[in-house]
Image 1: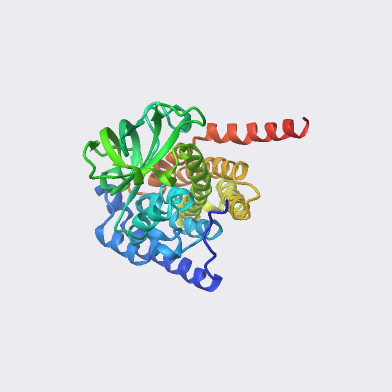
Image 2 (image 1 turned 90 degrees about the vertical axis):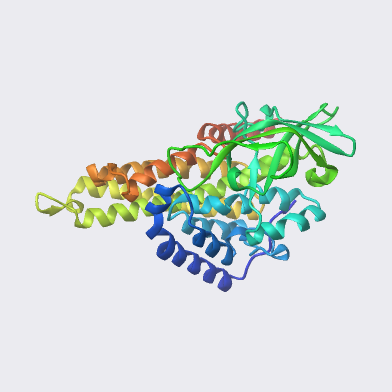
Length: 392
């Protein structure tokens, strides 16, 4: 099944990227410290993001989105990744893991009801999958959905849910109770955030990515009608989660490249002018070696992201390549950020210095949408199973 949107013409897309790059560098970068200290995205930046179509850049044009496919998505993501990751997080779930569940698996009625508001920014969607005992593997879900007349009753709790404090819609994954005789019994529901029985916890205090709100969400006898079941099918939840997450992993890899490029640029700028013993530290060969390692990682990551996105769009690899790209790029940006702090010396350890924030922000990239360990299992296990299948 091809769930990609039609390509936006290249000249139009080039203009979109140019506008986003200008917005990031001229409007967002100067306010990064403010965003970090207040743990909030300024209202005017949210408004400008909505006006630029960023809440729906990867949603179909027929529903008000820009209709970017994944090849174009990653180019935009590398620009958005150049600044605080909390900006992208504000509209990332609309375009990514939450929105793509609707795009790929929703009924026409569900798409018509929710996607236009998501594309305009009037609706913020949250992807409610992670639980205290089920993170990278949805098979461990404990949240249940029990048939109740013509609808469903949902009970359970979710953890670390991005945008939960501001969400209008929760895309909730739950295990059907009782479990159907066939299939894995994992379904996905569209649950308005104002439904009785939903309680959003206190906003999490995190190591990094200030400005992006996450929180626990509990569902106590939350009742939804039959139209809330995505696709009208109680057995597509697991497939919807895996497909949406796999696509999202390519996007996260692209964000990592954007952050790595920023850390590299900060390192080069600092090394070129900061002196030690009267000489710019960039003249020292060991500093040049660190910068060379940063540049190499950025270039390799960018090439890998583009190749993974192409494979996704062409439907030649929607499993191994996304995981390999996320694994490499998120590990790579951690190393690049560490080198950036090292190049800055004691200055790099000071709060409000860009590389200090980047160092903390990028640590999360190795955890969400599947940890590095899960990606290794997907890549390694997938290659072995494919070879075993060929030998049988």
